[in-house]
Image (cartoon, rainbow, N blue to C red; front, side, top):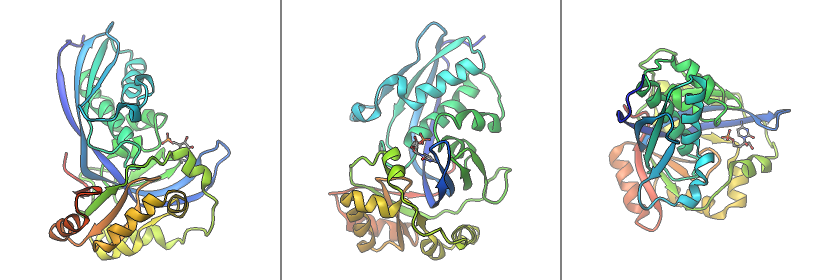
Length: 301
Ligand code: C5P
């Protein structure tokens, strides 16, 4: 029996893709991916409160968050994650979800997936379910392609349509993950993921060295090598369709980043810095006209 009124607070991190190779189109309409995904220290804060089973799942967000960008409550990934947990495990309780959003919505940073992953982990504890993480990852794959990677945590290799995820170096915690500093910038335009994938036209097959080079730069925490190994197969199409995104990348480059890349399907772009001080310098040069944030990969949360 779950007691109503129990509360848990979770910081749920955004992600970036250090590499994103599109290997081809699948018969189910999705694309076959190979991507190195790492969490970053930009988080949403989730507050989950148990309610009586009869209470519908409710969602609130912090003032200032553009609810029109979030869409309807029924389609919200966090709410869908809570309902999925409730149905799958026949839980005789409900939940109230409050999300303090910092991760830009529709920004290629996995914000919706991060919230869903955080809700699943939080309710797993709050409702006393104690289900293993791998089981939650399999369940979460149907919610969104980034959910399993964010449930896993640490630096992961994501394959398939996103459902095959393993730690880049080992599958046991503590997961190896570099502490790279980077600046994420977002021009405020929306690049809907299905549109971005639909426009993908193949082009050159990604070089086999992409995965190898990025993996070894992470292993040795070599940020200059990582800057050289950055790759996103969706980037050319997005830069062509959304000039504001391409311009954001140019601004990061001109501000002194070691390497710049589109995150996921955009619209956020990130640039690697040598260290924290260099990151602060880049932030200062970007000024106040463009939304940006200095973060580190692999936060301890
Ligand atoms: O799974 P998710 O909801 O994040 O995907 C959003 C959309 O992105 C999908 O509906 C699909 O159009 C596209 N996508 C894809 N191949 C993937 C992941 C996403 O084509 N591996």
